[in-house]
Length: 295
Ligand SMILES: [Zn+2]
Image (tube, rainbow, N blue to C red; front, side, top):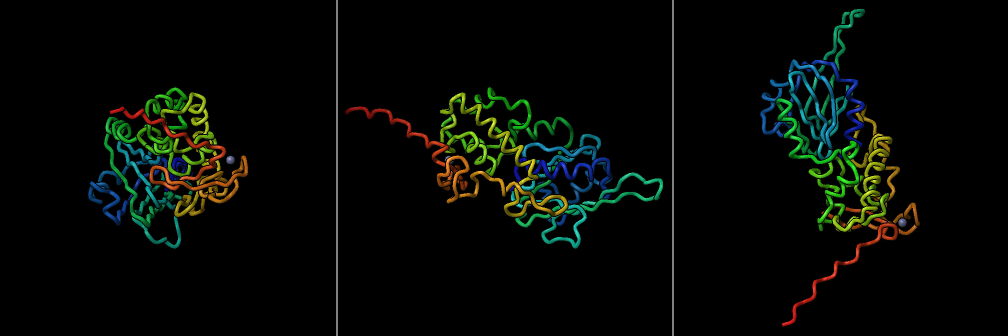
């Protein structure tokens, strides 16, 4: 599934191609994409509007149109946005046509054809009207942006305090930290030397500080490598990311740890395949059971 670095990669590639252009045509071939709106309702709200900016919040690609009209696009498992693909690929769910300003020398408008492909069909596009609605849409769904200055050690400490949930499950919870998924949670925990099963509330201040740095470093390395392509993630031009070649532990079960050469093992944490070096990331000791009362 595309995580923060993959969505940010798409945003950086797509923004210069669409910002300032007018949406001329929207063809939604699968009503699941626009649900709960019918395809024609979403289309009517967007066609004719100019794309003012393309942003990202967590794993959402946020299209900002004129008059505080927004489209919050989520790629979910297998979504991708492709520009001018020829021939048209399979699994197209949405087609978009945009046009730019009149080019005075050639007396022609720039045209742009985009398609949203999604083999598994979990991706969505949600219409949001008004800045207030936008604010509440994201405050209900997303926590801290980890690459934003608000993601301080103090704030991370406050998220973990008193919680018995494994730290990996907390990292995956979008309402606490936005944009971290299975790949970057494993990579961040390895960088921080923290076992994914450690109860969040039992992290020391030093571990919290290292975890924050691990999250930021893993995400930045992912963006630098233009994302990771394991299954379907594609760049806007159809090319693949390369971060999968730089994974330290993720998907490397049986290989040697880059730090200590112990074997990397695969566990299941929070229902997800999880990769760990149990020498660098010490397993938490079981919490002592309270003494059984004598009868
Ligand atoms: Zn190791």
